[in-house]
Amino acid sequence: MSFVFESGKRLAASAAAVATLLVAPMAGATPWESYLKLPTPHNARQVRSIEYSGGISEPVGAEDLKVLERQVIALDPDAFELTYRLSQATNPGALQDALLGILARPLRGNPEFFLAQASRLDRSCKSFAWALNATGLENADRTDAQSYEISRRREALMTVTNAPFVNVKRNCLALLPADTRGAGGRSEYVAR
Image (tube, rainbow, N blue to C red; front, top):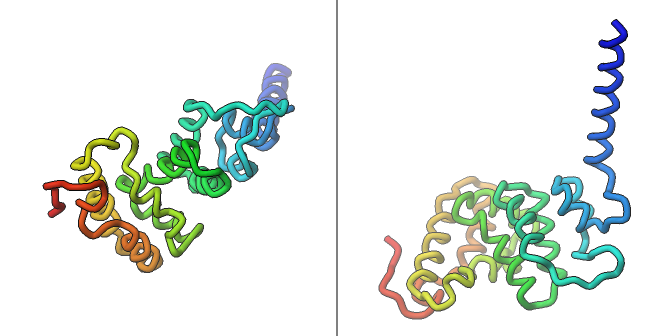
């Protein structure tokens, strides 16, 4: 009988420790570092900027952005909003480009999720123009691949028919080139 009671006390203590871990920031860590250690929606909502503890000005590592990207790909709205917030607060350059690229990740696979987030964050979709049109460094010198990607994004967005997203869809589509050859230069590829 005392074994069951002791096990129950240990189980309750373990549950309390896990609950504390899920909601309490890591001691001495910045909100960004806490998010990287435990990328929960709660921790995503706490981050306002990318900062590291000790006042150290470190460049953001690719592995740090992979943590954020994984959550966006998993369709976490708080991670998407965090990425958006960080992209808006970051000066133009490689980091902002990477953040905007992460925003584009769900575009083809789940265009309704993308539009739902765009609807919440910027119904005009104007702040998503770069994310909609950038096809990644891997396609920098591949105009056919750029044209193909843009046309596939257009096709994916066109599949969304839910009424709440009609206006934001129209706004996002207006930011994509109508002729996919304009997305990255000349191309023989035309979406059918």
